[in-house]
Amino acid sequence: IVMAVKVAGEQYESITGQLFEIGRQLRQPNGYPFNPAKLKDFLQLAIEGKFDVPSNSVVMPEQIVLSVDYGQTLEQMIAAGHYDWKNDNITAKKFPVVGNGVEQFEFKVFHFNRNTASQDNVDAIKADDPSNPWEPAKIEHLLSFGEKYPEEQRKYPIVALGSVAEVSGRRRVPFLSRGGRLRSLDLGWWDNDWNGDCRFLVVRKLSSAPQA
Image (cartoon, rainbow, N blue to C red):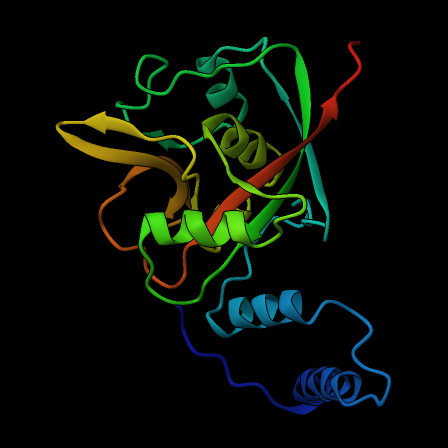
């Protein structure tokens, strides 16, 4: 239980001054000089009293380029992400990783901000840029993303609709989520709707990365 603390005097003036400065920046005629979406996320964390986000967490850039090493096994990819919990149905037999060498991909996170169905999301993803189409991420892309940006899944679930396996007679897809402060690698139901806070990871291939 967190006890309420009365804020007054110099501390009150300092905090309200910081809030006023944020407001001033938002009202600038030339626009806000930083990323307003990230500001919104940080402010929401502050409102909820979540001040324990690691200071050394990696900030996700506007353009995300990551590599997938197909020389690794699925188990090695999972281990590299240091997840606190993994669904036992996520196995190489159910979710095979197919590829050769090291491949580079451009990544993007789609957010529809409403309840959505899996196939509708796949159709929207592929239609977003017909000249250079995106594809729903597969499990190897999800694991590469989770390793590089481990704090993102604490903010919202991140789904990879490109890997689908039958588990107990129903189609399942991998996603990253959290349980409290724990990072989880879990499976969701393809046929169930996804709620509005879910994000959907997509990729498009850039090139083969040079071998070390």
